[in-house]
Length: 534
Ligand code: TNX
Image 1 (cartoon, rainbow, N blue to C red):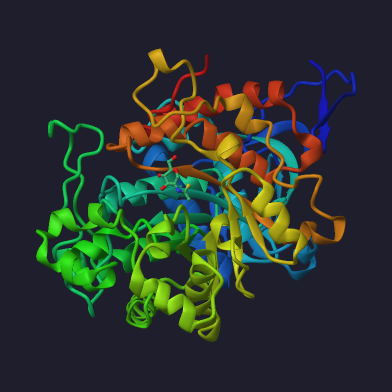
Image 2: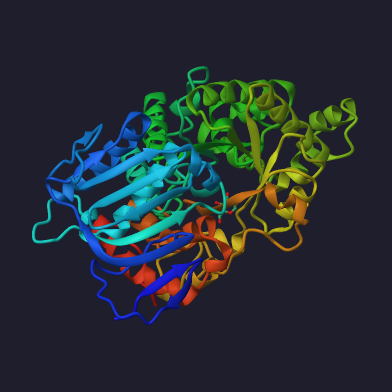
């Protein structure tokens, strides 16, 4: 058999005859450097996990990840005896050259060593180790008759980008807390580190805000049932209590994932207009309507008068208490601002503030949120419409209507996250519409996701560092169940994970698909209802 040495994804067939045992290496996302050697380390009930201090916290996660399928718990210990077969996990400053998320993983027949500068790196080393083991290790129940062999290898790895995200949308169809937690588990295996949760939209307000109880009392109970307008579909209402949120945030943090909350404003705000009509345009008329009818009257656009600014800042105050994320997303997209242009009260306000037009008013409103978040040590993120009428100084732009917004913002010295519909909208079809479940539209096959490079050439070389990373969107208008969500997400999210993590030089679609065939077995074992390959 040939001996393969892979460095930067270049496979060098050395032509040395040797026996490689312990299975192939099919890790997703592709690690930066993989050097394969002969032999394997066998995990048995007598294997020790050795770790101290902060490394021991990660070591417990490894033990917990292996226990269900293996049927034994490898209790971490502080030290091992010489010669004892052990999985060693260690923090080492000298690996800070690999960044906060990088790690080194060495496997020999006697020892596995995962070493990193930071706990996150150890965690990603664990995720790689899980993928080096037989896929059955991911089964939630005990599997007998499997040799838990890890092929001998040296892996040096670190991510290309610091923002590797997905978005879920419980506003359109509510997502039960436990389903969010399962979703995070699968993300962690792919080394994602951001989950944006679209918590508010016309169809529902999904987060308890103590100061404004009607947001959830009224605003979370609207069963729009977008997918089944005849009312036969699954119910789509509900909300997260503040305790639910704390639990989700902690569960994510344990997996080195930051939850980025999104509170939509000033458009996509129908749920808050239902709950508090005084936020809307022509509020007296809105108040006289039945709550459910209110948002359609203003298509979900609030009137950004000073009291409205205070309302959203109050909401953000509670949001900041719950979410440690440095980035707080305020939406900002698709505002039908003609409604302001045509409204006498808003016309008067624009005049008073000496604003040229409704774009100026949009910017004025967003700038207030930016200043507010900045004064609390946070950063505002918004969809690329926040560029119109002038970008607030501290804002990060999420570029969704193509790449232009991201290019303009990065070249102007703002941070950006690339999330263009063309490559990252996982609510779009992934094959011929006739043979796919009903989707919002579009066409985004796996190969197209994989082809994406989040750094467009039009970004000046000295501005490239402003590209924080990349994010895939699972908008929820047509996604009502976990099974369907996984179908839309995977395997496209596996391709996205590789775009966000792996070195550009290693990208090779054929080789990705060949690894993916093994990876799909892992997803199957995990119960992820992915879309099969063509
Ligand atoms: C546009 S992307 C939206 C979402 C929809 C999505 C459907 C963005 C910032 N706004 O509200 O769910 O299209 O693909």
